[in-house]
Length: 424
Length: 83
Image (spheres, rainbow over the protein chains, first blue to last red):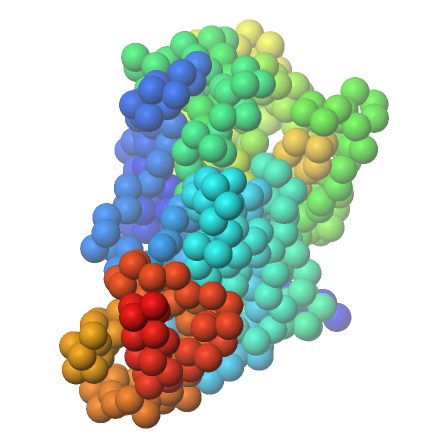
């Protein structure tokens, strides 16, 4: 029999709030983390707004030693370690550099790319013929699994330690990979998460593709407009989310606080067929991902109360809603509430899945739905499918049990997961 | 450079990387970087770069291989400074 899996710890580093307490407040108040960044303007970006978490040097030094911070220049690893350690402590564990090896706990922490600014530093040195001057820090900060290497060492984790990467579905995929490892009894606990660097060297390629909005440089907080008729591209974000997943048995043995149960999920790919491309999703695969996630969770689609969508504020939002309607076989007033976290934090790329899953779990645990910002002018295609009251623009208190979250990524990859209030 | 001046400068360079405070407090010419100060061997290259910057010298791969303790570090730095 498969183990049941529950969430016993949360950590988050988001543009609108660092730490679960501040992030929860920001969700409740509909606080945007999107700001104008002079650096982007100076570099001639079309989109000069973005979401960057606010981390002071004092906060950094609570998580990293002075030695670790020497030559440190990888914002993704910074965010990932803070979120990961917070989740670990939230689950009731200590952080001790001399702790015994914990062979029951593993780590899957995803990212798209690591330490791009560090890599830039190294490339400048290399091109000047100064390879010998790079020092010891380049490899660890630029290898994709850098965040997993840093975190697992801080915590002394001895089960599987790895990094996954599947573009913007990375975070949700990481959760499902950790979930399965516990389900099949290969680990008691998995710290799962994902992170993304901030800044021009990550965001530039997207700006060049013209997929980021250039219409809100003067009013940044209005820039991220999922489901709006005037949505004109996503707003880039950054940060990290992390969750401690644990077998129900282990959580009960420890008397741990249980945030929610992970019911199940699905990951798949559209193979860039049937309308799917490198950048556009194959709608058949999206629907199959959602349908299988529900089937694997052993629930009826009619019991789903809330959807936390991928909803990036590009022209694809309407297609996403249509896919949800078809996959759930629910439309009009029968449709669940929908929740677009990106309206507050932007599109945090590889970190998006876990930041939004943490948002989903917080809303489930605290029984509210965060406001969907900037969709006062709902897209008519969306309004034709679902009534506006299913897309709350103000926070609503709601007694609910089940939330479904999906993430889609470049390369035509999909991930979908279901969380439910834990009951015996 | 006089040995006592040199050892003070080296101590300042090494300090950020040490993992054993007691061994550092009792640092002598015989102190081994990895065995006594528990410096992560990967950080030895960072110490080499810091030494290069401090004394404005260049250390070659062969010098680095020999620089395992305070005494050898002092000897190599002095050789370079007098070259």
